[in-house]
Image (cartoon, one colour):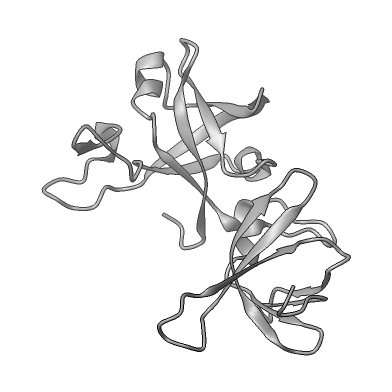
Length: 195
């Protein structure tokens, strides 16, 4: 598995009889799935019926962690609200069904270059957020799409040990976001502690 591998989706099920499979992308814009012709698969973390799934392709032997499987992608395309894909190694429905639940990783280096003022969510996670006055508002722990806009979900440790972390939500729109400094790992916003 490449050091810069990012989880971008999971295999939902087989699609058709010729080895195609349905993918549920983690992003509404799954360009990373389309741009990479090499996907790395790991079994789902989900335990089903007392054992982990999906296939023997992931076997590592005697209690060792499963090995990632490199899957060479022949074609990936949009289909309704999912993505369907085919691989050179998967030739029939039975093989495609064996991949059900597998998590898909692609190297970050294979993502298409983001445009001006565009950012991949994975690049924003963990950035520190400050307002214009330099007051720390928290760290980006998640992002969520509300339809028309994306919202930064921040977490800030409480000054008192017994109190839970403070959570803030800030719309990721130009009206509130002044600057995103990826190399500096910092976002500056027009936001106050009491909003």
